[in-house]
Amino acid sequence: MHSTAQLLAEGFLHLLFPEACIVCRGILKEGLRFVCASCRAALPYTDFFKDERQYMENPAGKVLMGRIPAGFVLPFLIFQKGGSTQRLLHAIKYKGAKTLAYEMGYVYGERLCRAGFAYEIDGFLPVPLHPKKQRKRGYNQSEYFARGLAAAWHKPVAVWTQAVERHIHRASQTRKGLWERWMNVRDVFALTPEGKSTLRHQKVVLVDDVLTTGATLEALYQTIQTAGPQSVGVITLAYAGDAFA
Image 1: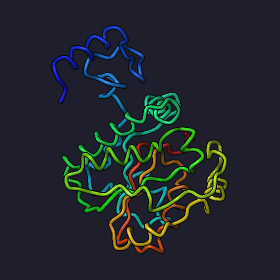
Image 2 (image 1 turned 180 degrees about the vertical axis):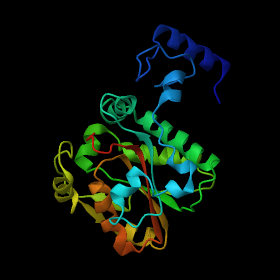
Image 3 (image 1 turned 90 degrees about the horizontal axis):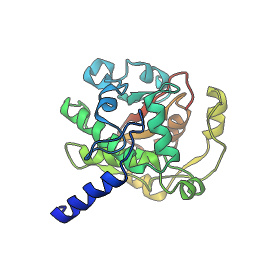
């Protein structure tokens, strides 16, 4: 818990160095981080989770249909070039805003649980980064998003960060088409000894930052199949459709 002195100090620092909203660049009111109240309300939420019939019957679900036998595919936000989601993702991936990834996960986790999310899950499996890229960035944004989801969940759930490793480092997926993306990621993941035992008979949710063509998530699913998970779902921070993040 913060002491009165700490709260006063934080308030003073906010006056000296006010933070700007990532979306509109307006000054944030004290107590808010990253995104102002108006921009939070106007974010392009998918809200697919509000109707169980849309757990798969939505544009993001159709991308993975026939490729991953998922019980649900539920991105949080819609990505549009130049839009608010792109600004959030840019801050998360390239500006060190890992806490924003966690916060977005927590907000989405709360929304799902309040809506009475119908599927039981045992844990979240974030798409791993190659160690070289993770050292450069300092963190895995999908892991922080997953940890936020788990923290808000209605029961204790796992976040599996050692079950799969990305053992091949390849160029960015940006500007690649579906086939090029699949060829770029099809063999980059490997199941670890821990993953073989940990994921067996588990209800697993694959977590990524952006769903575009679905090549990365398909490759991750193919990797964990041999572990024998009981079921698989997908949650992402954003869905980009035909736009490439």
